[in-house]
Length: 300
Image 1 (cartoon, helix red, strand yellow):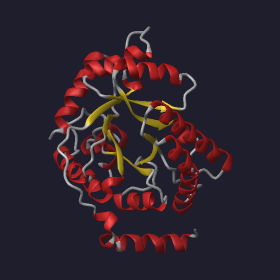
Image 2 (tube, helix red, strand yellow):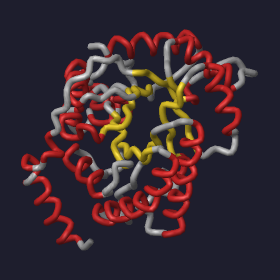
Image 3 (cartoon, one colour):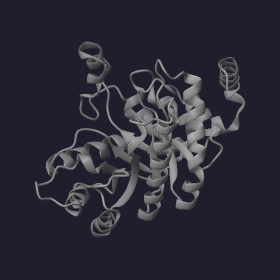
C-alpha cells in the first residue's frame, strides 16, 4: 500500500463511518458484573511463594482471573495449569512477550518473524490453558517506520497467526498503547475489520486513551470488537505538571477517567469479559485494596 492510497483509503473509511453497520452496533445492555483479574507480576508474595501461592493470593483478594506474559521459559505450562486448578481462577489473558522488542512493524523481516512465532506460541499455550485472549501491540510508528508501513506489516503478521488462533480457540486482541499508531477508535475498528477474521479484536486499555482523547467514546464505535479490558488511571494535571508518563501515577478513581460514562458505554455493547488491572501491585493488603476499588469503579 503506497502513501497516497493509504491516505485516500483512510479518508474514505472515516467519512463513511456513520454508514457502516459494524461501526454502530447496538447490542442489548448487560448488567452482569465484570470479572476482575490481575497480572501475575503484580502479586508480591513471600520470597518463597510459589506460583500457586500467588494465584491463591489473587483469589483471596477477590479476583477471578490471572493475566500472564507468555511465552516465558520460566513459566512451565504444567505448573500454571496446576495453579489454576488449585486456585479456581481462570486465565483471563496473555500478553505476547516479544511484541515490543521485535514489533511486527520492524523494517527487519527477521525481527518481525520473532513476534509472529512468539504470538503463535502464546496462542497455542493459551489454548492449552483455557485462555481466550492474547494481547498484541501491533507495531510502532517512528522515524524508520511510516504509519502506512506499520499498518500493512502488522496486518500481514496478524493474518499469519489467525490459523493458529482458530486451532487454539484463542483470540488475538490488539491493544491501544502509546506507539504513535491507532490513536482513535475509528482507526481501531477499521484495523480489526481489515484483519478479516472474527479471531481478531481489541484489547481496550482505558487509561491509555485519556492523554489524547476520551475513553467513553471507544466502546460505542468498537462494539463487539472489544475482547478484553485493561484497567488503569490517568491524571491530565499530573501529566502536565510533572511529565506525560507521570499521569499514570494516581490511584484508580483519582484521575480523569470518567468511569460511570465508560462503564455505561461498555454496558451498551453487552461487554461481559474481564477487567484486568494494570497498575502497581503489592502484597495481600494492596491486592485487597485494588479489588475493592475496581469493584466500585466497575459498578459505577
